Length: 133
Image 1 (spheres, rainbow, N blue to C red):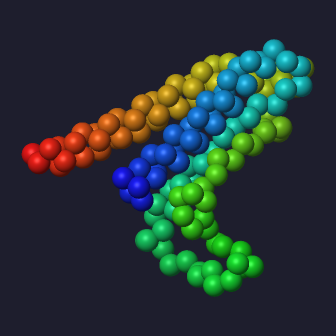
Image 2 (tube, rainbow, N blue to C red):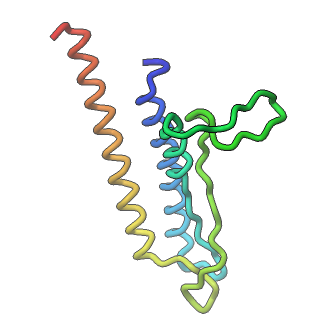
């Protein structure tokens, strides 16, 4: 399974979703802290760009000093933890909306569950192949 593209995507997705879980838990924990700015973790655009790499013509990086125009491999995708400063939810400058955070948490949990189901199906297929069925 080493070097399998699907496993690489599942691994990167679960790693980034774990970071989103942590950010949401920090946001919920600091919902009553005056001046706290909520955190948002995004990575989907980078991962989508890497997965659609074959559909687009990109510049070739021929020297380590060149700046790549996109992430070249799945391992180059990193979750961006962004502090949202320009939104105001309460007068004490705390911008954490508990309902929004619970919605993000539910969405993240559904995405994680979906990817774990994909992983389980892939393992079932591999077991069938190994067993010769």
